[in-house]
Structure formats: C-alpha cells, structure tokens
Image (spheres, one colour):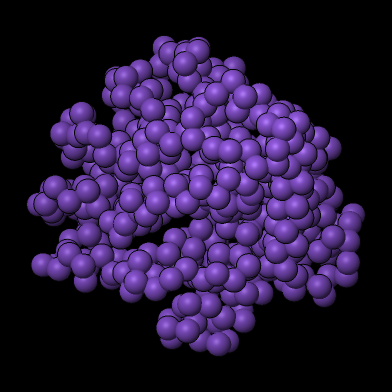
Length: 456
C-alpha cells in the first residue's frame, strides 16, 4: 500500500515482487562484475557463479526490508574465491537488506550432499535462479539439480513441510498476535502453490513456466488452466495474494527502525504504525487480513488434497486412505498402529498423527524404531514433536544432526520445549557449525523457548 488510500489494497503486490526482484538482480549483477574485476582481473570469474534462492529465486522478493538470499557456487574453494565471497558479502551488506543470507557452503560436493540428504537446504539449491557469470558452473548446477530432483522428493517435501508448518505456525503466535508470514493463510503458504505446481509439471513431464513472474502466480494460473479453481476464485485469490504481499512489505518497512525489525506480527503497535501511513483503523485492517488469509488457507488445503491424490494414484493399493488416517489427529491409536509404516510418506504422517493426538506410546515406539534413520523428513518429524523427550533430543542433537546435510534440524531441536540446556550448549558452542545452526540454541539459552521460536 505504501501510504496510498485504502482502496488500493490488494492491487499491486505481485507486480511489486517483479519490480523488487528485477532491482535485486541488477544490484547483485553489477556489484558482482565490479568486484569480480578487482579480484580476478576479468569479469568472467572462471569457476564461480552467483544465484538467487528463496524469495528472489522464486521472483517473489518484496519491498520494505527484505532479506537477500544469495548463493555463490564455486567449482572448488580457493584463496581467491574466499576473498571474492568476503568482498561480495561486504558490498551486499551496504544495500540496506535486513540480512544478507549467503550460505558458507557452495562447492559442487556441498551441493550434492545437501541435495541428497536435506529438504530445506536441498530446496535452496533446487530453487536457485542463475544470475551471472560462469555459464559452465550454471550448467553443472542444473545437471546436479536434475540428478536429485524427483517426483518422490517433491512429494516428501510437501508432506513434511505441510505437517511441520501446521505446528510451526502455532509456535509463531505471540501474545495472541498472528505472524503475517507464518500463519495458516499467511505468505509462507505461497510455497505450497509453487511446490505443487512443480510436482504437477514433473508428473506430467511439462516444462517450467519461463515467464518472469512470481512462482505463486504461475502455480495459481496452472490450477486455473486445469479447472481446479474457477475464474472468480482466480480473481479472489490473486487479490488476496496481492494484499498479503503489500501488507507484509509495509509492516517490514514500518518495523525497520524498531526492535521489531524483520518481524511481521500483526499486533496493536504494528496496526497503529500501519494506520499512521494510511491504512484504515486497526479493526478494519484486521478484518481485511482475516478475510484474505482465509482465501489463501483454502487454496493451501486444495493443493494439499491434490498432492495426496497424486501420491495415491502413483502408489495405489489403498495408499490414499491409509495416508489420510495416518496424519489426522482424530484417528484412534489402535487404527493408526495398523497402518504400514515402511513407506517414508506414511511413516512421516503416522509420527505427526501420533504427536498431534498425544499418542505417546505409539510415538515412543516410532521414535525408537527410527532412532538411527537417515531419512531427513522422518528425523524432522520426530524432533519437532512436543512428545519427543529430552534424551532423544540430546541423542539426535549431539550426534547425527551435526552431520552435513542435517543442520537445519538443529534449529528445530533448539526450539523444542523439551530440549535440555546440555543439548543447547552442545549446539550453541560447537565451532564447527554454521552460525545459522547455532543461533537458535544461543537465543534459547539466553532468552528462553518463546524467544527461540520467534527467531528469524
């Protein structure tokens, strides 16, 4: 909205994303060429290339005060490439982003490890969008993405993340205020529209949409073209997406110079700041938000249902019926126990179902059964649960999850209310771990569980 009259709400969000992403691309490319010439003596930077991931990778960067998600790929790490990385980050940090998120890893071997083992960091690679320089590096990254991307991975990604975010969104409520990004129908749900679109294209062997538009828009258009949503629903959903993008951008902007920087809770103080820049009164703005997020929540339910149907068609033999029984909290423990759990999607769903319904005996059995598993989504499902005990969290948090490829799950362990100080210290003080994997544990130790769960 950016200070205009309330009538503009829900009109320009997607276009804002395109404009902000194009501006981002220009900044990164220009600075890359300048520093590349300083370090390498040529603009070509052989063996090195830069990519966008996250929201800029999906062409969904918003204004206000966004993070810069940038991925530097090196054929091999050298002293020169280390200096290049250091200089680039220093330059990018002068551009006013709330945070420059530049993973410390980026060699070919790193990429293969994360694509093979991790859903979160694997997604970062799969969602990369090439920006500039060595085209041979770009081609090598593309080949590695093709090697590890699959229908099975796409299904596992949606299943785990949908069940995970159902819980995570509850943890992101602060003093009754919802987080505009992390709530049902919030902007984080845009991911599922994109992931479903990508999955559907893989199944049907259709190419990606080459248009320079946000991936949520591309996914929405595909649902419309397939008759999954009506023309009226397409218009209503587009309006809702536009509104949420504009609202989040304005909240980030209004919070930029406050202690709430980077956070997007729609609390009283945030609503007052929005009113001061031209939004309606707090009650009216809240009503807009609730109306639009309900539209997105319904869309999210649709793509979840379509995903389960797709998996059922691929697996057959009553799989869909079993899966729905596996994850629904209302199913009794006796029925859930009878569901075969060797399929990773079913085992993930059963663990979540047992956790959500408080079926501790079944959960403990499954946690013991998968104590030594290497499956990322099964491990993640266990350590997310409020039923996961202190001993298991210590077992995972001080051993396997410190291996390359599992680091994101250390953040999950650190947010679990049952984690011990001993485990948190082991994570927080480990010099071999990246800052992104230790910082939640550090916050949990210093400020407690609630603050850890609101760590951005």
